[in-house]
Image (tube, rainbow, N blue to C red; front, side, top):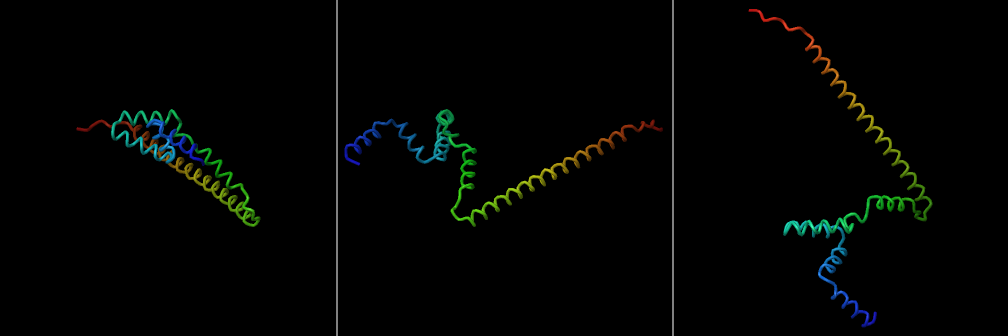
Length: 144
């Protein structure tokens, strides 16, 4: 890099406003820095925190990376080959086994929830029947 370009980049950084430099500084540190700045600004003076929150939502700084992109990157890493055929076969078998276990566990949880719901419903119906049986008895006149 020559001295002319380094001087011009320094001059550009110096010409940026305070807000632009603060934004660049927070962007360099990530989402946690933005959240920390928002919390501190709420503590110091709540309208500034509210303005910062609105700016973060409006500029999509809070939602720039969704769960779907994380899932896609995970799938991409799972499907890439390591170059070792034996390891790739082991990894594929292990992932298949884990997926089967997860499906079986989810089915077990569903059966467990269904059994619990049935037991609660049966208890409700028994209580209701007992209440109705008690309410059907005629009142006896008081004996003096």
